[in-house]
Image 1 (cartoon, rainbow, N blue to C red):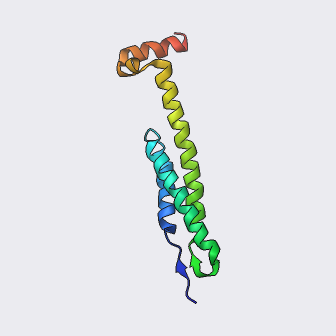
Image 2 (cartoon, one colour):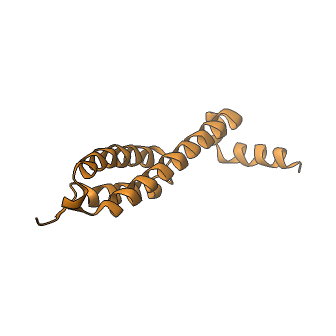
Image 3 (cartoon, one colour):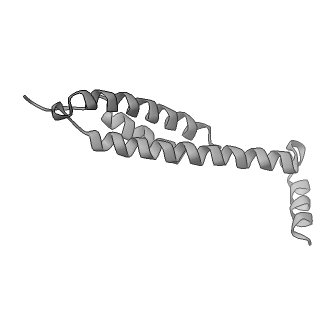
Amino acid sequence: MEQRQLPNATLVLVMGILSIVGCCCYGAPGLIFGIIAIVLAGKATKVYQTEPEMYTGYGNVKAGKIMGIIGVVLSILMVAYLVWIVSYFGWETLQDQEELQRKIQEMMGQ
């Protein structure tokens, strides 16, 4: 029987890559793309495990899932960092550049 491409294998890989890139955009896009990659990889893995000899592209699914997990972790770290920055300096300070520079200099001991 002829082998077919695993459904969504390429999409999982693309979403995994976008999750890593998206973590640099305040974390939200990376989190969304990473979760989509993980969910689609889970569905594709179930399809593959029923008849592994019928499908190709499982390597893309595994790589996409790993990148999706990495993207989710990096996005969570980015969101946590942003929450810490806002809680430490305050929202008003972040909007006023001179005040922000003054607080950073105070923090550095100058």
